[in-house]
Length: 451
Image 1 (tube, rainbow, N blue to C red):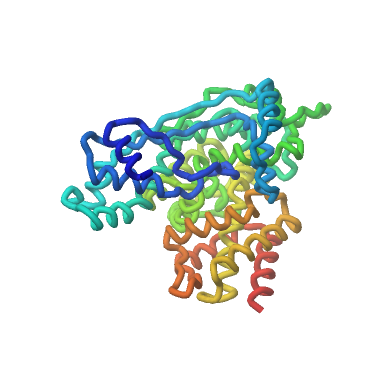
Image 2: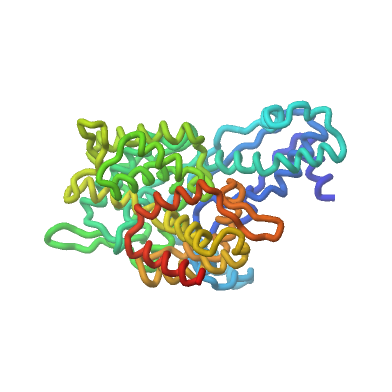
């Protein structure tokens, strides 16, 4: 009945809106898409197409969430709160508070007709079971394209910039002058190397960004004779991490290049390209990146050129590129940018280390998710702060889904998981990027379990 209702709506030209992720993201990142509604849409269009059908990606950008505390609580394991009259009354009270600005950006429409022509030439002649099977087989591919298109329409607002700058700092506090400089570098990167043609960067200077974050209650100013410090209260870190995750994909490649430069004494342009190409499948799986391999390598070269221009890196006579001198502000800025990806790289390494130490074909999916959750919780106690989305069980399920979809992990007939050789090569790269204590803790945990 539902399929027929949807078909009638589409055939008659009514606009329909649905959420490709199938639910709210509690981490702030775009989730792996769910194909149910989209699959029915493709099937309906193949069955009857009196007019063109376009999928319009929409990105909604918030500066503050009404339900921010609820999302964080659910990530930390608390049960989802049910709806009630009391909760409704509380929501009305919340409307009196200041929540900043909401931006809605519409991306470039995706033509279903053009997609089918590319992926299944001759689809017009299909009928019955062949038509349904073709629609089912193309759903995941179109869902991924749609998710990437939503990310391409990202709006980077002032609070996103503030969160990107201050959340990676070890104590979630920065000297105001250093914070303003970091925000300016982030604005310049997004302006000079926009993530996509549909992306939008808010027009605001660093001073306005900091003042806006203070106004919304995300941070406080601590007066000091040597210069004021901007500090984030513990209760606001998770909310800012959510808003940072909204735009993390737009800074993923610059942060990946920064990670290599900070961890290496020097690197040739060829090595930078090889490194980015090796990490791209993992970042694409986690962050729905739009880049192909060739596009990512070309973008990495442009990133290096911009880093050199901004003073974040320097080029040598031999063509190699190096991070800025260790005790310069530019090196600290490069380190902060690199740290924004550190939790994701740590999860990459943990997954690969577990599977290589235990051995291919000896871990079932449920057991891998369980081990990853326990070990990441332990790492967050032993090492630096980890946001709640880093060790939420649901995030591991989505992560493994995307790795399987990318072909980096495959399941055999018995449900046991196997690693692609490309993943093992990436392990050696990531190992050199992470702090020594994190690598040791991950290795020890993986070896203990294997034993």
